[in-house]
Length: 243
Length: 355
Image 1 (cartoon, rainbow over the protein chains, first blue to last red):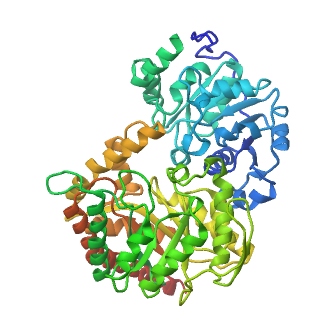
Image 2: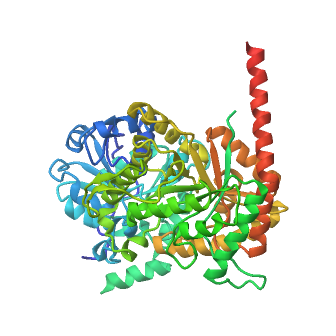
Image 3: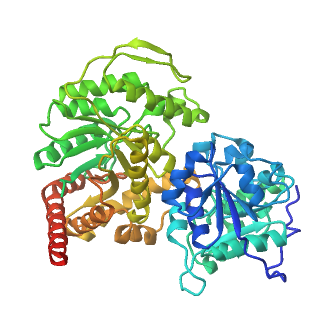
């Protein structure tokens, strides 16, 4: 793997992205239900798939994310403009790879050894977990976003674009159009999108990075990402990638 | 207005002594006994100790501590907060708590949980990959054991039981709750078994959890199970002044928070984050009046029937901890009851005017 951020999208995309109107969320736990609320509040059609039958989560969605509809993962994906992965990273093998072909996929997941068990492949400073997700979903376009903010901050944080103190969400990806789409989604959900380079660069958003857990405004998040290489974790990543 | 239950909760954090040095695990456990005896004398309703398997905490075997407390206290309820059922044997959990119930004259209570830490899995030979099935099967078996009739059960996580009768029997049934950290599926499961729900609200605005109370009630109605009053537990600490409380809590909390955070990849906690939790979040820290006002506000806003304060987090000193327990029991709880009664009276007179 090369270390260069060769495909980094330009900061200002020329094409004005269209805000997705239908969103599929795979995962109906703490994070998935918070995201479903954000999407409903943004006026989007929201389809949520849990690990079992849709009926099993109907009551949960009715109460904690009213307006979101339960669905099977394949049906949700088929109808969606963008698909959000909000399940434990270790459950990635359960997502429908073929159905996701051609879709823009938001990777909001983190390696969490307490849930996923100790996995050297997911804890490798040379490779970001989103790169592994992209490799697994080879026919999809993966964009990393929403992973660095705690779900309770995500729940409390949304604000309209013109309100001071609006919090920022980092967006990283290799495909400029997909990054623009997900940035539009971030904005629609009430946060300022901050460009964070490629999927390879997205290791700067993972656990052990300064930005992990960040619930800050855009300028501060940009500054954190800019100084990542100079941090202790940045040095570990740099050394692993120089090998 | 139903009487609200007020409790104290600890994981048996290792405190520091007068010189600032951490005391031994053994002394930490004896400190708990002193605090529980004081809480009992001051009329606190319930005292719970939570199972952990880390050096910062002295309680790995809650019911052994509770057995000790049972014989030196008189009226306080004695609970676990939580028992990590996934990595324990439901039959043994029932037997041990039934024994505490006998020793305490019916004051034992178990809060079952999956635990937010995972050290118990490798320690007792369980695989994290079985996290969901372990809890699902064991809570099902535990609910059968609570009938105190012979149990026939089979599953994948322990040996089957055939007409197995389990002893000792209790005199009035074993009070059992389920502790939940915010997973909606766990809330629904708790309602499905008809257990009371204890919400761990350890950060952010408590109102964020209101949908979970609603979910619990709606699920209980759908399953036709009993809808019990919901409990919540949150961290807190009381001293004579706001400044003293923050000074006694923050430096020690910060150390343990950052040590555990580093394992999970979190950056260090900032003072601004801490101050926000104290002002509007889920840390009830300050003078008796400050803490009482915040607890009363939360209890009223949430409509909960029980509030347990986790009064230790790190190495708060032995003397500051005893003072915190004393102020909680003697000043904060009576004051919260008073504030809630005032709110209820005000609401009642408004209703009378409206009628």
